[in-house]
Image (cartoon, rainbow, N blue to C red):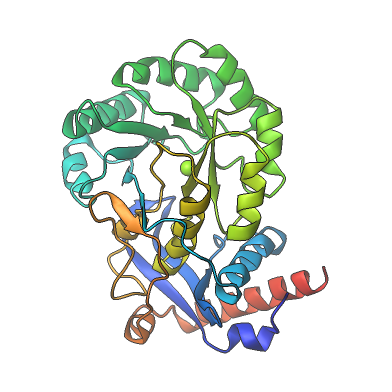
Length: 326
Ligand SMILES: [Mg+2]
């Protein structure tokens, strides 16, 4: 079912949310939120993604806004996120995630060294204690050799997994073989961007864990079917969504995530303002599985500049035409 373009645009708003710390190379997150009969929903492919890649994100927006979903749990556990900051900034960042017993630490940031990564992970382990789960995320920026060295040095701190240490699926598979015995599972994130990717990653023996996001996999309904087919544990994460998109992720996490893992859905804490006066922030280490209420006042306050709004509406129109063409 594909709603008309006019229906999608009837109550659509483009926002630019300010962020506390640079993340994924940006300090402002743009998103288009729109309202369907089932509730508010979000279309927010990263700006560098082309229309073909963005099609799944629009399918996801429509799935959430035009279909009612039942929450499979009241709340889901979430991880704290530590960007590539100096060790002395770690404790204050972790304090934004009260009750979280899992941290995801960014590593391999351009301009930093493995020494920096080791110091940051050591500080996270020190602040959170021995019982916490600590995972790292390299966003595919290491070569196999660099990843091998980094993981050998980071393994003593106890890693739940290493997320996307290298860019390609063959590199992940090679690394996984090389570090067998180190006790560091490999998770695939950027390698899971299209619906066909999870099965390809599983078949290549490239990962022990899949990081999945509702929007790039075409929404809650599609993502549930895709991850069930892989046989690998899955961790649901956000794509730096507003609280509306985080709600979509929370419904997926409650329905599809493997027990024992925390979801990457605590990222509302990275914004200084959101589209909801009651954002999906972590409380006691968990986020509720619900649709975020949306504040018209905050939509206005965080409205993107007119030329950016025009850009997003034109993008929605093009991607809608792609879906309509089948
Ligand atoms: Mg990641």
